Amino acid sequence: MAWVRVRRAAVLVLALLLPLLGAQTAGTATAKATAKATVTATVTATARKTVNPAHVAWEVPVGDRMLDLAVSSPATGAPVKWVRLLLPKHWSKTATRTWPVLWLLHGSNGNHKDWTDNTHIEELAADRDVIVVMPETSACSGYSDWWNHGKGGAPAWESYLLNEVRPLLEGGYRAGTSRAVAGLSMGGQGALKFTAAHPGMFRAAASYSGAVNPLYKSPDGGFNGPDAVKAGGATCLTDWKRLWGEPGYPFDTTDPGDLRQQRLWQRNSPLHQAAALSRTPLYLSYGNGTDSGTAWKWGDPPPSPARCVNPPARGLDVIERAVHGMNQQLRTRLAELHIPATVCAHEGVHTWPYWERELVASFPMLMRAVGA
Image (cartoon, rainbow, N blue to C red):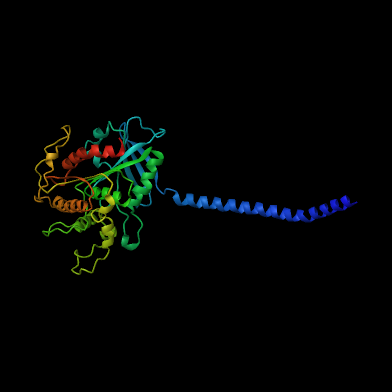
């Protein structure tokens, strides 16, 4: 009888617990479902945030190992912008490997065809296991995200190239993460400013006649850094202040306290960001404004170091004389910071024969840095 009473008690307890257990199980299931939905929503939101707004609208093969990509992105403010690729032997979109990358940046008034039209980069890279990327921006891009009078928005060239084009190439064209960058004039400024602003993204950087200090003030009343920005605005038929605003004192004002948007100019100046160039192999070349001839042509042996005579600024090329002053400042600043750099100050002007010579001279360093 005692056993019967125990059994009845157990049945009664079980009957009382079943609704509670059912409610707990339902609650657990609901909680799990809610948690799963939350995780799914979070993942979806994260994925949505990281979707690349740029895409390749179409491709145009140019020869056996050259490919032009028409890239569409709201960041450029244009229907498409072009990116030219030089591709290594045995490259394919479906390869299981990736290739190191050399970015070549054009100067003011340039485009994605400049390097292949004006140098022998195809022959230079032919036996190297490297992808050469030559993007188009605009004649006055500054390789920067424009200030636009404080509103931001398009064009945003730095974001476009590094946050959109770079992932497109790495995701669909087998570009690797071992990168070097080089550029001429405005592109030289871009190459060094990218390197300083994104430590570790580029393993080496080269600047040929680079506009490395947009805040350069000519000591003899000649061509200043802001003059180049103003000229670029005229070339692009736009307000030059859209780029970085106004430089403030000592340009266009006599008030030392009137700095306006000078902080933006400094942010985009390799001279002012020089400390961030440490631990990156650097190559700087620039002329002095005198066109004495390159004493070198394609097919000759590598350019001799004897050309790097560090001459004073002189000659008729006012742009290269200003570039000379900018680069002398950067050279001094790097020395003060104990940052090593290969520097070639030579007689020369702001034109392609000198830039091709310096590309050839710096190419081995760039290739060593990326392992090509």
